[in-house]
Length: 298
Image (cartoon, rainbow, N blue to C red; front, side):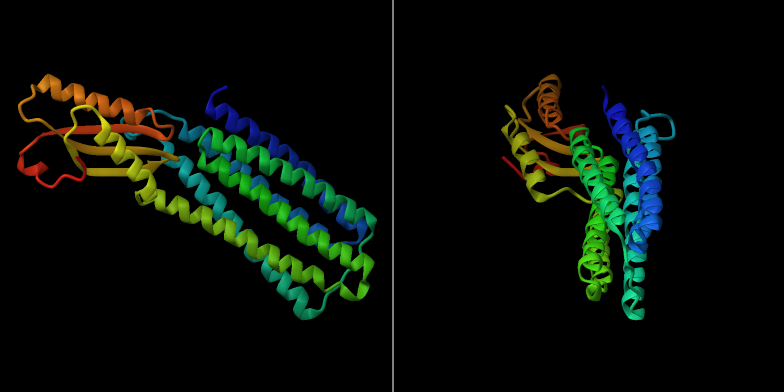
């Protein structure tokens, strides 16, 4: 199964689970007398929107290069992950505002065991979806699928908060206000997860270099290539979770054009063997040329 099929399949599984959870949470919350569980059901509706965004992003991002997009369409998947992050941020704000309002106005509820069962079911399903989706997303190196996994985790966090509130209200009615405190804390966790996803997508969209450790590994591989004297003008950027590399390598100026080409090809093949590298462009400079006076390696 290719990466798009794997990502699409796990996203459809999540969408089906979200449809079921929306119905179960809202219905169970109403029948079980828990406004928190009902609110958590509407939180799951945001997961459905996230699933739709990821499905569109996967399909569009899988398109190959064309005349208008010579480098392919993988940035569209990055945009999809950014939208998922923004959905998370918006969901977190709603959760935190609603929790603050309930605390300020001293609102309480008196849930039954049904609300507790529904919340536990949601927590188990959502944590399972998080683990499964995250594993698939990392395996296929899909930023939007990984972002969607964290959206599942945010729903699990929300269910934990609801579980604390419902349990406290059932066991200690005087402590029912803990529902609002837990919901506010959950909102903060969701906000943090959403912000990190938006931040990472923004860095990729603005061609920010990857971590210094990754760049050092790339530089070391270049310098270790046979007959490479050194390198300069190394540039690395990400697109759709994968790396694009440009570099000038310095070789002995007495070599023939064909020999210089073979060295450049060796650098390219080695870098492309790295798991996250999508494309490599290598330019050859002769040793002693003005452009190779300041060499980063060698």
